[in-house]
Image (cartoon, rainbow, N blue to C red; front, side, top):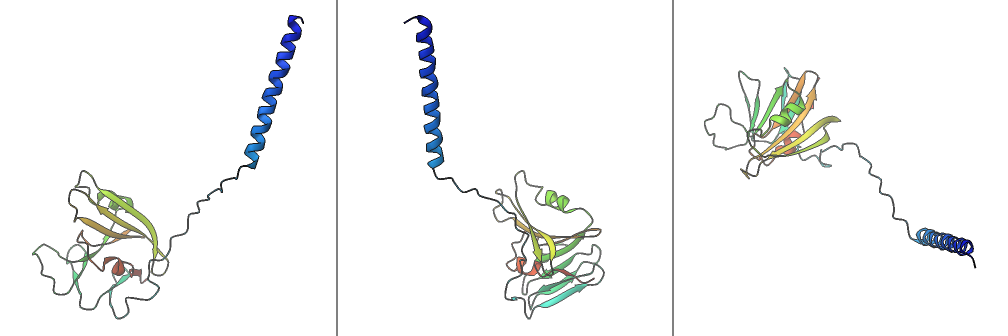
Length: 193
């Protein structure tokens, strides 16, 4: 056999080996079960209002100047700041510490944006953990549920419900006091006009 014939035979054998390998690899791949494709679907925000109204019998605070109302438990009191427009809800029998304006739940109207409030909450700490969730409250009101904490002071946890309005943001918050009924109270916020 001459050298050309040997080269042709080697090329043919190599092509047959490559073809056979590719064929069996394709068959084995086709016979393997296909993993199901997971599709991530973003669900619209769901109302946070409990299925049974746990606020039956609660009192309602209405603010005609800003056009909102919010419910609070029996026995709590309302405190209105003279100068700043801050509204405070106070738990019964709570000893006041003597600060300028003390409450367990605060409602303020801020002319800054939601992101400004998120950025400013807990900004005094070098490290803070921010948890933010878009939710729906009351009568289909979009809101942001915000929780900010810091490992440097484990008891410091600031809860906020941020509700956008035409010219600003309503900030319902617990002043980093971890008020037990906070989310239940905050979820009753609604516009009256």
